Length: 258
Image 1 (cartoon, rainbow, N blue to C red):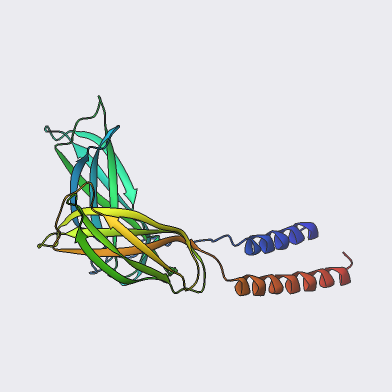
Image 2: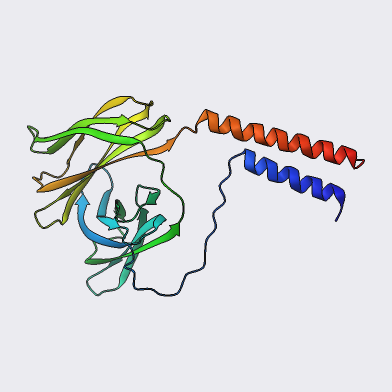
């Protein structure tokens, strides 16, 4: 093999490692087992009556029943008319990038209702996902919470969240899932808590069930960051290793007469 081609390949590998590009290995499906796959455990729907375009909204809860983590979790809704003819398909991911075993995630699917699309008579939901060895980065923790009904009749949940990770959290969102006495989902609310939360910082939050006037039997809170800053010490260590490796490579090639 040409010596210059070898050099170019080694340099390209170093650049890929230094830039932090993640490479995932997708394995082929294994033989069928008795394990219970991830599933949509509860779902509901409503028509959004906000000013502007109308939407038929399907929302629900996904639970990871596997003993491994999963990622790229998407719920797909197929919509049908009264004659059971397919009229549309739409999908949405859950908000978490990775679901751990027994962990739940929520989704909201929107179907635009216009002059060519009527309110569906029925819908069917399917789920797709990938198994993964990756672990979610966590650190945000809800340290206090309380609920009440506001003067307009909406259910309010408020409290405080703290970043207990060693990194700054960016684009932090709160998801509240409301249930009836039979643990059926009746509403979801999403609220941006902060654009960033520093290490050890505490931030107050408040979310409303609006536009749903409900009195849930229970609710679940999920706090999620879009991403965290990488640790500076980790980046520095990687850079030092790369510099040493590249220096050794240059010395070796120079002795070979390059």
